[in-house]
Image 1 (cartoon, rainbow, N blue to C red):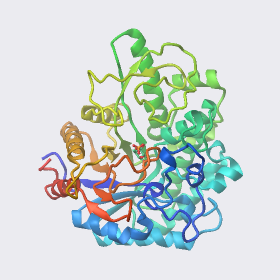
Image 2: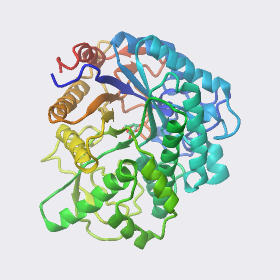
Image 3: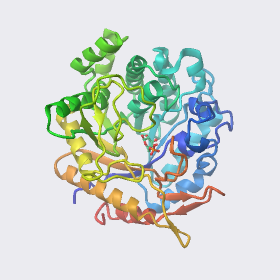
Image 4: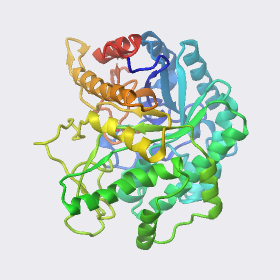
Length: 466
Ligand code: BGP
């Protein structure tokens, strides 16, 4: 049996996508609360105002997790619920909500795995200091992280600082699909450094407070493969791999930036504000693990022209058919060769196994958690039952890849399906479902899907029934 005894069988959500209660009990506005109100920004104007109303229904939700036998729940904290303006004044009601949620999970023997930042920056910080464009934001993040460690660190031993910096930075500063919706690659790279700095400061604070658990970061990985074996496609793949993978993982796992890539982007976009002290800090702030969010690989080809693409798209970096913003590569979709979901994300379980090896090869034998993986679909309802067979098949195939990776010596510690419950998809509203639990949008009632019962068996048998 490949899966170790203490393997964390989990599922994940994020505050803005699941909680609702956007202005309840003293919560401050986040950049997402405002962004979704700009006409045309989200699918049919959907918002997370109500989402799955988890804020008001967490007791029922945790009971459902307990009944399933879920070992661990990954959720994020809404920064503006604890610090309505991002720093300074604390909302004790916000602290109480997460404290109660943590207690409820522990009561059901579920390990809480907390993400500090899943994209919902307090609007106050965007307004006052320009959010992640400012070095100061890393200090505000440290203040917020410290508060979380102080209030919850006695009960929580698993911490993720940031979720997928590549997505909120690229969508926020290049494609404009996320707030603050700018179109300036220089700002993206600069914000990226300030986020790494914020991560490092939080890790150092965690150690300084003497907390005993594990802290790391979660990033998405879309391993890049050359579409053909041509020199041009392989060269283009170097660009894709340098950006999607090395630019985001090296600072966290090696404490440095990939030199050649950094030199090339500085030559193109300008000198970044990265000091020697910053680099020393990145080196010191050792992560205990790396979280991987995996959905799909990328097939890379040489672009038709080297011009910058300012295309306003709202897809993943690497989503099929796009030219990279820097114009150095394009991603290719090939339905004759590859399998795709309804939302045109390639299904490729073997690339999940491969990316764990890529991480081990580059950074050594570090503990890995798959912190997101799942299928976005429109689930069929037949005679009142939610029959999400396609999701079962998707997760099963990816778990087989995990099992193989474990057999090959990868230190895989846990797997978190995205998502626990149907929730808001940032740009696809409530149409794209991911959960084990269905939410009736008319009355917000919960219902177990076919995949819920299946995952329950998987957990009970520690993976034997996959
Ligand atoms: C990841 C995010 C999640 C979730 C997931 C599915 O990038 O971390 O928050 O949204 O993608 O994405 P989507 O809802 O766009 O299908």
